[in-house]
Image (cartoon, rainbow, N blue to C red; front, side):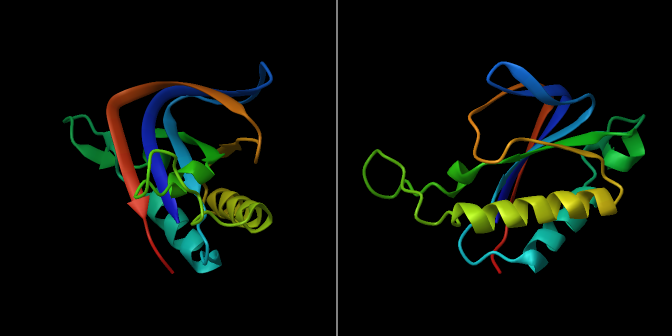
Length: 147
C-alpha cells in the first residue's frame, strides 16, 4: 500500500468537466492498493493519517493534525503509484491490485477515515479525473507499507 500525501490550501476534483469533490485546507491523498494489501494495512494508514502533524502551529512548527486545523481529505485512488520502472521506459503495473479488490480497500479506507473523525471527499474510482490543487508549503509525504 502506498500513499502520497500533499498539504493543500484547496483542491477540486472533476470528472468530464463536472466538479465531483472539493476541499479547502487539508490534504490530497493519492492512494494505491498493491497485491496482497489488506484491511489491517488500510487501518494502519488511516491511523497514521489521522494523527499526522503536518500543519504549522503559531510558531511555524509542524505540530498540528487535520483535526487541529479543521482540515479535510481529498482521497483519490491512484494505481499508477504501483508503477515498476525497472525495465524499459514504459511503466509496468503488475504490482497493482486487481480493480475490484483495490476498490474495496479504497472504500474501506475512506470509511475508516470518516470513523476516525477525518472528513473525506472521494474521487471516482477508475475514472479519468482532473485535480486542481493549491499546494501549501509545499509539503509532500510518501507513506509506504507492506502486509
